[in-house]
Image (cartoon, rainbow, N blue to C red; front, side, top):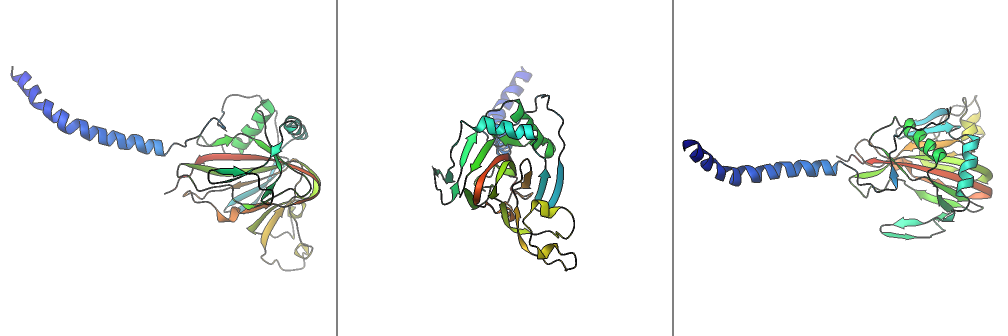
Length: 277
């Protein structure tokens, strides 16, 4: 009987003290975990399933360490470029610009066509290559791949790929891949990045260079503004976010107007935790 009385005495403590306290503690923990998990929809992919991809080699050249900007030679094979053009052919639609909740066609800002491509094995191997380049981070998700076609006059005015609109997730990094570059003009410009010393090395194969800057007899002078030439199969990779989740202002960039011919690019955007403090 004493045991029953003891249990009866504890029951009010359980109801009045323990239940509210545990609900408060565990509810906080669940909210914290939820806040650390990116809210992503089905258009984001993190596919780690086995895939038999052909071996592929490329060369990487680091232009900037902060923000990290890497030029990648031979990111795509000739066969992959041809395949991307083929599967994009019947999917082209006018590119749009998003401002808040509104999406519209604004050719003065962005003049191109976009194609949301199907995820066949070739495309999935390109996704895997992009994730492999970034170390197979488990918190990164690849956005569905899109090709972009720029004809004469095609351009995209200066913009950022990160938005800063969400405290949960954002575009952590970008690959701008040149699928086809039978054109003049159409470079990718970063006006806030410092030009490297081009008196030696291969930078002038990939960048627009002034003749004066290439003279080995002249002292290197700091110059702001870098423009990558569109070269078929090559790519530019950059990180959009600082470790604390703030966007790099230096990644302000533009697709310069195509003056003749056609340029086709491939956007590979990786989403992940914004990690704001």
